[in-house]
Image (cartoon, rainbow, N blue to C red; front, side, top):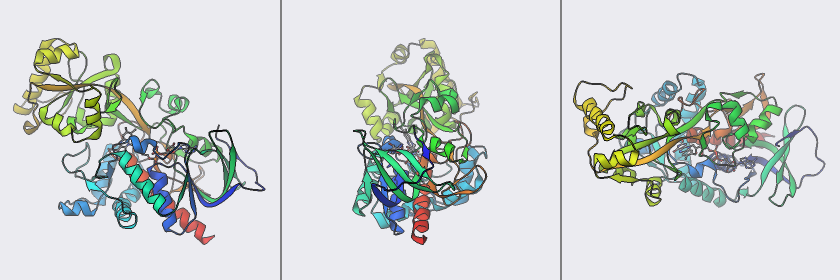
Length: 468
Ligand SMILES: Cc1cc2nc3c(=O)[nH]c(=O)nc-3n(C[C@H](O)[C@H](O)[C@H](O)COP(=O)(O)OP(=O)(O)OC[C@H]3O[C@@H](n4cnc5c(N)ncnc54)[C@H](O)[C@@H]3O)c2cc1C
């Protein structure tokens, strides 16, 4: 149980300027920003090495006004980016907060490249649902693992200590809410007390805590959790004891395309570029292009809680550009049907029904018939088969988006509107920009706040500690 203990400590085992809980993208970016501001920083990570949900992710970071966008003549702006996010969350996020993170998104990537030798590319082959322009950036390897490894190398290079196998358990607070220390528990049970002048929560949300998911996101109680198991909602527990404001706790990123039973993410690019989802009766059931997050629930509502992604050779080749997809192919998740009969056979649905579903989508792109779910089928993205490719998928909870309310310097706010004196929050520990449910999540909202709030938290904590 993660507790806040309102007590003084006579002697700390170690003392540090800024303590950061969690070594995912948010924690490592915060550490670099704090160190650049001259602070003495230490990161505590419960795992043997930094990974978190960041390592599991596709590593796509949305950002505007970047040099990579300029190189392709992009006309992206902060306003356009804010509008895309707010349209998706139906204006349920605080617009000023959204503007705050969007307006520094490009600056953060440029700083990481210029100061810390990070590398990014712009993904401009396809648009993710809800983005009006290309703004997804990624490590050249296009994986979250490459992103976290590269950030970890940068953190090591500037001499920041990342203390692994160190689970932060208790926080030590003064009556005014100032955090002056924390306890870390080692795998052998040994507990050490670390003193600090400021604290940054970068320990993501509560997706790995079944009880909290039941309480805040009951619709996903029985759903697969596909994020990092170590994200147990410790920041929520500490926040509750510190009188901190928590918001939009039912908000989360779902995904409607996790290969089952293989457990591999199948890129949504395949669907956006023309692929469809059929249920096991062989019929479409939604507008697949609304967003992959809400598609988690749409898929879970189908018989057996599954769907089949159906696509063609062109889209299979697109999929092969992604490491996850190649892994899915290696594990046998991608099936090939050389005829409509074989497609029906694999799905277990009548041939006539499959034929009808396919004919309908040809009609939607070639006649004035329109899709009852509102999807616009483009002629140039028409499925051409056989052969058809298919993957059995299910819906999953990727990460939670509700959390601690922060101001525009990533300072943690109390429910009464005052600031905690020396505590900051970033990434999945802070409330995100996705509104109240599953359908407000615009692709990339997760790493957007991991990178930008990490940067703000590190910089603000660094400035505060230097002034003291
Ligand atoms: C499959 C998948 C694909 C995704 N793809 C994308 C994408 O392409 N783009 C995007 O924007 N988002 C994506 N996301 C979401 C994205 O991964 C997260 O939003 C982001 O990684 C959050 O970063 P973080 O640093 O806050 O958390 P994490 O990376 O999860 O790091 C938190 C760290 O805190 C540690 N920790 C927790 N509690 C403690 C404690 N008490 N003491 C010490 N350490 C602790 C954890 O072990 C963990 O290492 C994806 C998520 C998943 C699951």
